[in-house]
Length: 274
Image 1 (cartoon, rainbow, N blue to C red):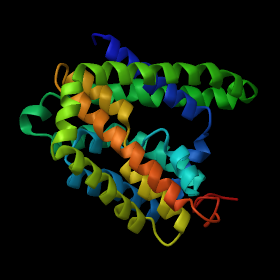
Image 2: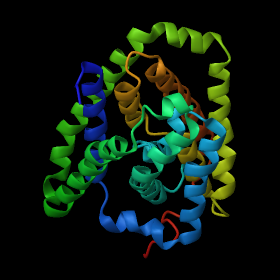
Image 3: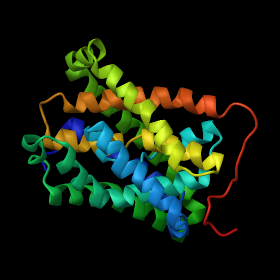
């Protein structure tokens, strides 16, 4: 793989972010949601079936945004379930992302996204950093906090580089998105995702909040990596960034709205032993 500055920025952002997530979770955390088969099935239905069918966008193929717990915290949702959901979606995306891409993209674009290479990308730059972070947490928990500080700084540097390298060269695409109906369409997709997750979240309010936000947000790092590798020189990456920015702002407002008043619902996710 030819590493350009934009791709290097995305790789730095994605790998360090996944490593940070790994420093915060353990294998029991990942397995917790799997014990509640109904909730797991509804979560997968919302994120890898219903929303991709409606969206038909590259972003729709990459569930499991790494900063979901922060958004859920603002909404006073279920933080434990947010972490479980984030990890489970990122793990299953190794299988679902290549399949979804080849289903929702036009034929001429789908052939540009090789399944094997996409799976390799997911394993190397998403699951491997996650596993390494979990290993550090298990073997040297006393050093996890100290390690997290410089890694978080690197992640921020990668995010800044990603914003600069993917936005500045494609300002014309952003202008087209802002001036046309694409902006409205993206915002509509974000809003439509909320009731999908809310309804499929079940009776518990804190779970509903979490799944609503989780269904709307997508893994921008992974999408930019795919866009930069498979659609280099096009405006695909700019469209991904547009959806990310719109989704982040809209979900922040939505989270603040959901988080008004006293905290509701359980702290622990269903299926997790106390």
